[in-house]
Image (cartoon, rainbow, N blue to C red; front, top):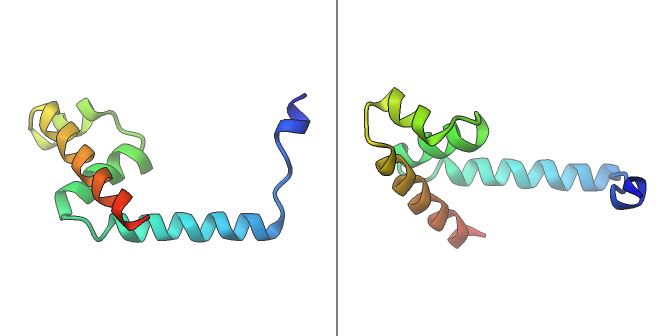
Length: 78
């Protein structure tokens, strides 16, 4: 069953996925610095919101709100 659900990707599909990931990364880096760093830490490095807040010395709600605002901005680009 899993073999049917997981179709092998063609080289073209892999290239498109890589290009899309690069485009998303470039767009993230266009955000305000704090938002970009927080989104990068959360989604590229896999850090928890609480970890990011601890490193920055801020309340987790500030990190959560900042990430949420940044993601809303990203949606506008795509």
